[in-house]
Image (cartoon, rainbow, N blue to C red):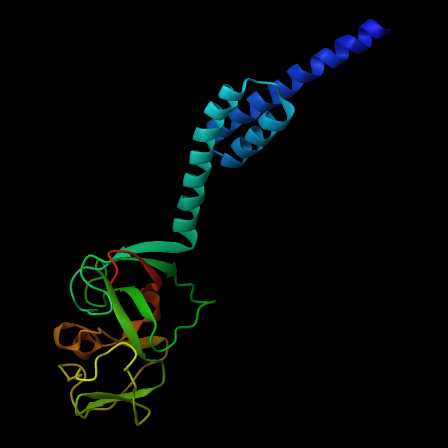
Length: 221
């Protein structure tokens, strides 16, 4: 009887090792990092493998897990964006890298002042970055270098210098009042003298929105 009990207890470590190995194999074959994470935990607490072997197996597994989390986050929640050109200067200069939150139409509400990434109404293959100025249903006009919303001069001192002038163009000219349509937005670049925006080509449909800028992570001011 003692011999049988001893044989059973000797079998348990092999069973634990077999489970850990199986989880590692499944993680590799199915490309499911959670199995690898569970295998690492069980390996450290349930097996008597050499410490050097545990370290060798843990490091690449954690790299794969972190990489997978980054990919999932990238696809579902965030998107990096590189600023090209000076249309948003001085807020964001050419070559700045931004982290942006994907825009979900049913959950997200844009506010005036948000900086957004969207598909160009003129060229859907081109992504642009601008600041939201006019919201759906709001009358907008330009006069004496200032932007007026609902008849009130817009205070843009938080992101524009005091000597910045916003002049009209082909779509929105000085003194002309236009009302932003439903589910569309009027956007402007912060570098008003060198930005092609709603003043030239009109409104941005909600369907064109990609993401909202969260923060700058490289080549910032």
